[in-house]
Amino acid sequence: MKFFADTADIDAIKELNDLGMVDGVTTNPSIIKKSGRDIIDVTKEICDIVDGPVSAEVTAIDADTMIAEGRKLAKIADNIAVKVPLTWDGLKACKTLSDEGTMVNVTLCFSANQALLAAKAGATFISPFIGRLDDINLDGMELIEDIRTIYDNYMFDTQILAASIRNVNHMKDAALVGADVATAPPSVIQAMAKHVLTDNGLDAFLADIKAADIKIL
Image (spheres, rainbow, N blue to C red):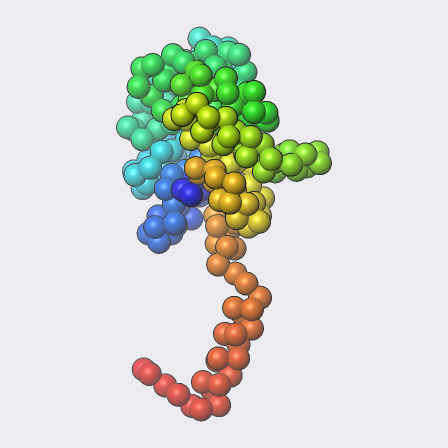
């Protein structure tokens, strides 16, 4: 499963990239606004750091303006994936941009029917929002499983990008049910390395080293 970092934090992206722990980045205007910088400048800097897809979201809601914004965003770098909402206008924009050779990430997906439409429109990525479904007592992972079955049934190329990930269990479960990509905040990706038994074992190891006065350097 590929890891995308859901952030516009340049330092966090660089750290994950240097470790080989990031295959792409997802952003949106709200995330970039927190940096206080221009959306185009921040997006360009991220594209220069990572080789994989960088999702940059349109702000319009009508198809024509989404297409115009998408074309402008696509000029930032070759690895831009234009992010559009899963609305009828968003699907129109997806079709046009995809036909022009631009990667498109269709976001705000909450049903398998929506995912099927996005694949038919040529989406590069479909982004089902796991956490938001969990928030209303629906099973986000069940949606991933349904989309996986449908896409496999008909050999769609659209990649399933598990989004709205809140914790490490979401990451594990997304991998188990066959998501192609999971996008998560850097803090969640880093938390995957943590385990209480690892911490306990390390504490015991350090105590033994101290008691034996062992030094390597």
